[in-house]
Length: 330
Image (cartoon, one colour):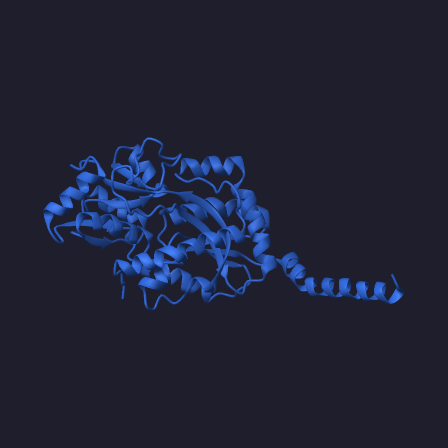
C-alpha cells in the first residue's frame, strides 16, 4: 500500500470522525434541563400510569428532573400537537399508545399531525384490551352482549369508549358490528372516566386496557367477558378471547404505551433515551411492578427500529379499518 493510499484512508477516517462529532457531542451534552413527558390523557389512566412508573427511574439514569404533564383533549390530539410545538431536542417527549399515530390522523381531518411527524423512542408497556361490563350486568358472555344489542334495535343501548376515534373506539365498533351496529357510542376522556361510567351503569359495556381495568376486576367492581387478542394473554390466562367466543374480525393488537419524540430530534439523543428506557423496562423490579399494575414489558427488541415496525404494521391495517367503518370525528 502506497503512502498516498494510506493518507487517503486516514483522511476518510478523519472525515467520518468529524461528521460523527456533532452527534456524539449532542448525546454527551444531553440532557441539559428538565425532561417533560406529555401524557395526552387525564391523570389516573393507563397512559398516565406507564409514564409515572417510568419517570423516577429515568430521572435517576439521566440525572435530570423528569416531570409529567397531563394534556388531555380531542382523543389525545392536543397532547401530540403540544409535543410538536416543543423543541426537537429530546427534552420533551409524549407517552403515546396504540392507534394514536395510525387512527387519529384518519378519523380527524384536523388532527394536527401524522405518524411521520414523530420518531419512536421506546415502548414501556403492553396490555390487551378487555371487554368489561358492570358487575351486575346480565351479560355473561360476549355473545350475550351481542344478542342484547341486536334485540334492542338501533341506538337502543349505550356503550362507552376511552376516547372518540382511538383504538378503544375503533375496536368497540368492530365488536358493535356483530350487534348490527345497534349500540350507541358515548366517548369519555380516558380509561379512568370510562371505569367510573361503567360502575355507575351509565353504559352497558366498554373496552379497557388491562392497567385501567385490573384492580376493579379483581376487586369485584367490574366483570370481564373477553379479551381482544388472537390468543390469550399471560395476564388473563383464564379469560377467553372474542375469537374463541365466535366473534371474528376483532382487533388483535396489544395496547402498547411508548415514548415518542418530534421527528427532527437528533438520532444520538433518541439512541441515548432508548438505551436508558430499554434498560429500565428490562429490570426485574420494574417488570414486577408493571405486572402488578396490569402491563407487561416488551420481552425483546425494544429498539427504535422495532418500535417503528410496530407502528408501520398499524398504519397498514388500522386506518383502512377506520375508513371502512366510516369513523369520522369532525
